[in-house]
Amino acid sequence: MNETHAQSGAGPPAGPVERWFLGLVPVHAMVLNRIILGGVLFLHAAFRIPEFGVLYGGSSAAWSAPYRDFVRDMLAPQIPLPLLPVVSLLAKLEPEPRQLLLLGLYAGLLVSSLAFALGLRTRAAGWLCLALHLLFYAIHPFADWSWARLVAPFTLYCILSRAGDYASLDARSRRRRGVAAPSGGWVAAWPMRLLQIHVAAMYFHAGFARIDDPGWLQGDVLYEALAQTLFSRFDLDLQLWRPALALLSRGVFLLEPAAAVLLWVPRARTLCALALLGMHLVLELLTNVGWWNYVMFAGLLAFLPPGWLAALLPGVPPGRAALGAAAQVGLQHGIRSQRVRSWNE
Amino acid sequence: MRRYGVTRTVLQRRVLVAALACYVAVVVLAAWRHEIRPRWLDPPAALARSVLRTAGIPPGVAVFSADVPRTPEVKITALCLSVRVVEGDGRVRQLHPRAGAGCPAPAPRLWVTGEEIALYRSATSLRAAVAARFSGALHASQQHHAKLLAESIAEHFRRRARARGFAAEHYTLVWREATLSERTGVRGERVVALMRWEADAARGVTLGWRPDPERLARDWPRLDERQGEGAEEP
Image 1 (cartoon, one colour):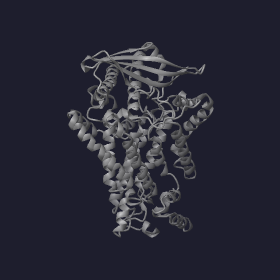
Image 2 (cartoon, chains in turn cyan, yellow):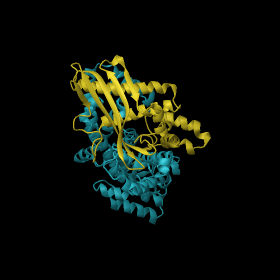
Image 3 (cartoon, chains in turn purple, cyan):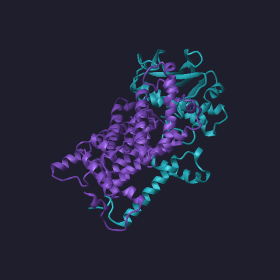
Image 4 (cartoon, chains in turn green, brown):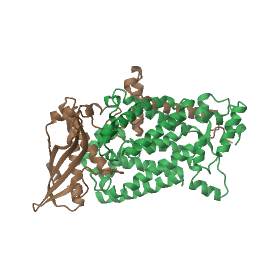
């Protein structure tokens, strides 16, 4: 597809909002998201295999009446509404048939999440692994931190994108049949836009949740979190590290609310995304908070320059050279094509 | 060749853009904290929140804003639940933690199990509910929820004992906390609560707090305040 194609088509010219949502963007960010989020869902389920019986099995305490009553009363808002009757139905089964059914569903989660990460029947695998991941979350919501819910919308945006058309087993099988990728690596922007908006909303929500929190204002939160052996990876001498942790806490305190704005400022976007990636990397090195940081790594990739992401996926079109040429054409001739605009702005 | 890659007609494009704009508005409104939100946006924000809740979509996650206890002077560095069972022949056996597992598990820790997370969240929620009860912030239903949480913990260990082939008649859970003094840097340990229950589920759970629930409410003043809108665990 060339520039002319990007601007061709029937109907009146598109407005800025329409161009922003429906313009074309390189596919790399969503492909990387598919691989990372699918990998997270698979590894999360795989690491839980030894605990399957304790957490979800037919005779697990997750099926006891007090726990189910507590979930219904207190945690129901965290669970997708359509899953509540499904869990209620499962709770009514006898332990043995429930165990068999759950084992089958868990195997389905493992297979579908791996298939989603590898891009095998990507959309179907994505829907299935998302539904099953949320089902097991709904069975035992206390067994996970909040990342297990946040991963759901991010995965949904991936499923809705054309992320399965590239760097995937589906693409490989298509190549073997001699069928070219349908869009040459340029795909509709809206799934990536939703991901970008949700990532920014996440920082907007998190950043301003802390503005009146004395722990964050005093820079003590990371110190207090790391004092907890559940969250801390290492047995650090906290007093020695306290100034550094205070600095990091204050950095997080300032960076997260600022990110809600800076991620949309073209000149600041890359730097802000890199700072956030660095923050998550440090948090991942220091703390045990499940897969939260990996989910955010994936989301933040949508804000990095497409050329950088293309370098990570060398076989996926458009390559770095094509991206550079497209940008240059846009700049040199003043062509305000959807393609150039959508990822430059 | 499709224009914009997804749609063919102007109507389809416009409908899609309108739907996307609505969804974005819902996400942004739900993520907008009430502390910085104009009052007139409260009703649409509440509606947006309930729409997202229906789909189970969180607008955001404020890590370390709810589950990390903020205690003055003494930091709580670990929560340990140890459970012993008395079998029919009078033999006392350790059910949790397993021999050699240690409590707290020694660093470095690359992984936290789902069971650890579930027990931690159950215990801290139970404690928060009781703290709220004695700080006067308790909603009537919270007492019932505290009871459900205590019974859930008991049920968890009942089933663990059954799976391990223990012929348990009575259970005793000792809830300890490892502590670190802010002033002196001295590490210590204290008992927070004792729970007892029988093998028969119908007999319920007795729960005793130490030193007392009023002190508990003083020690954990923040946690119950943060159980409201948007409070999130990691």
